[in-house]
Each structure stands twice: as C-alpha cells, then as structure tokens.
Image (tube, rainbow over all chains, first blue to last red):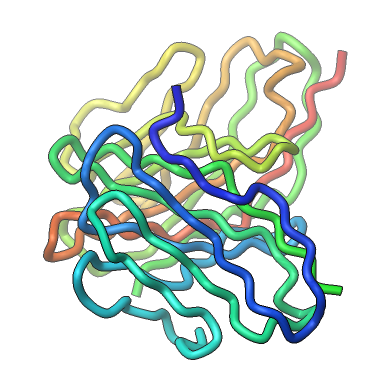
Amino acid sequence: GAVVSQHPSRVICKSGTSVKIECRSLDFQATTMFWYRQFPKKSLMLMATSNEGSKATYEQGVEKDKFLINHASLTLSTLTVTSAHPEDSSFYICSVDRAATGELFFGEGSRLTVL
Amino acid sequence: AQKITQTQPGMFVQEKEAVTLDCTYDTSDQSYGLFWYKQPSSGEMIFLIYQGSYDEQNATEGRYSLNFQKARKSANLVISASQLGDSAMYFCAIARLLIQGAQKLVFGQGTRLTINP
C-alpha cells in the first residue's frame, strides 16, 4: 500500500484563489519532507524542504510568500499556493524520507490548473 | 552545487532488447547517493535502483542494473529484456544528505523511453 498520500490529486481553481495540497506520511513519522514542482515534459524541481516544527527552507528563486509550507505534525506537511495565477499551473509532488533506512517515498502528485 | 545531466531526451527500443540510459553527475560531496526513478504518464514516481558513492559493486534490482563509474562520474541505468510496460520517463537523481539525515534530491532532465512491439 501507499506510504505517502497526497491530496488532492487534481484541483482546478480560479485565478486569485488559494489552494492547499496535503502530503501525509502513512507509515512512519517524518521530520523532513520535500516539495517538488514539475512542468509538463520537464524535470522535477525542488521547491523547498519542509521541516517539522520550524520554518521551511526554500530553494533559490522560490517565493516563500507565494508557496506557504506548514509542517505542523510529524506526519503532515501542507503546501498552499496563495493567490494562484495560471503560471502556477503545474504538477506538485512531495517526497518523504525515512531517514532510518534511507528510503525515499513520493506522493502521487497533485495537478493544479489555474483558470 | 550538485548537477545531473541526462543527454538523451528520447530513446526508442525494440521490445526484448536491452537499453542503456545515460546519466552523468557533478558534485563536490564526498558521500552521495544516486537514484533512478520511472515516471509513467500517471505521474507517480517509481523507485528503480539506488547506488551509494562508496558502494564498490554496481547495484542490481531485477531487470535493472546501474553501471556506476565513479571516476567518470557516470551512473547509467541498464534495463535488460525491455517490456512494453517500460515505456515511461526515466529520471536520474543525486542525493545530498542533510544534517537531519534526510536526503535532498536533484533530478536530471529525464529521458523518455518508448518500447516498440
């Protein structure tokens, strides 16, 4: 079964609204989760490292006020795309690291379409 | 900074043939990990194989093997006896170990593999 659950898998929203995407670790606690963004036919680009109980670490060029990350518990990280615009339309995917074993697990991804 | 280069945007292979997907990397880290993932059209990322920088033997997982040449900084994926279901995007990635023990991945551009019947 799935180790990481990501929800919603697809979301369509109007320009100017905010959208929240959840990433849940189902089998183990995770102090660190990662958020990636993937444009069509392109590679995954790391957006930020989500740290439980502290601020996320954003990659260069990623607007932290635009992409709010909250890692309030050891099993849940959320990515909120604020005031979404059509250029924010993309595939967002999270990954969870089981540090004890070195295994990395990815969520199913969330396809965001901003009209 | 770490960098992964996949020079083959697309590959076309006949079913049952072996295929090699190229991956070269650049890193200043002494210890690192190399991953290969498969991404079908559904978007999920499927883990295929992992190679640690200090592993002396090439990693193998079923039909997948990793041709690791550390001096050349290459980590090519070899798929033996290809199947129609192998058609997908393939990503090579390098991992940096963070202080907290988690692994941060940098991905290559990907190679779209198409298996022809």
